[in-house]
Image 1 (cartoon, rainbow, N blue to C red):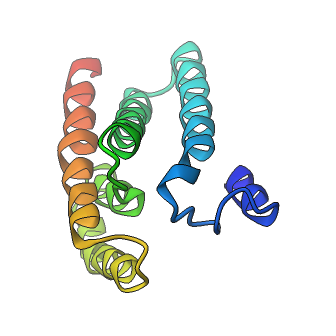
Image 2 (spheres, rainbow, N blue to C red):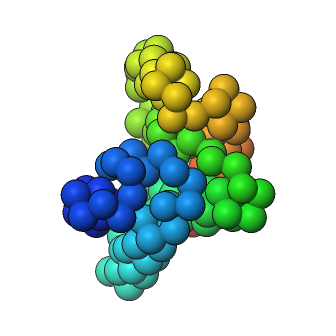
Length: 142
């Protein structure tokens, strides 16, 4: 987040939300690199399998979002990806906050930062990729 805010203050992209798809290259690269390094530290340090599965799921989601954003030229919603994936990690009580996730997604559309399709794609990616990878790895690593 520090890289994103610093870049926005220097005028490298439009805001800390980086609404311009083309401006997302550096923030994506920093996020993927940072998460990959953290993932390696978790594995090397013998972290609990749930943490390794979560980091792997996050990394898969980031790489997929990068590919969708730059390969398909479609600005998928990262807010939606992350929020939906957290329900599986924190359990069914966290699902009560799903209304808040809906409000966040709705606000992204209302602010003009995303289309309904971009938010929907983010939610689907969070469920399928994030949740799917987490469930598979949690079972394999257990």
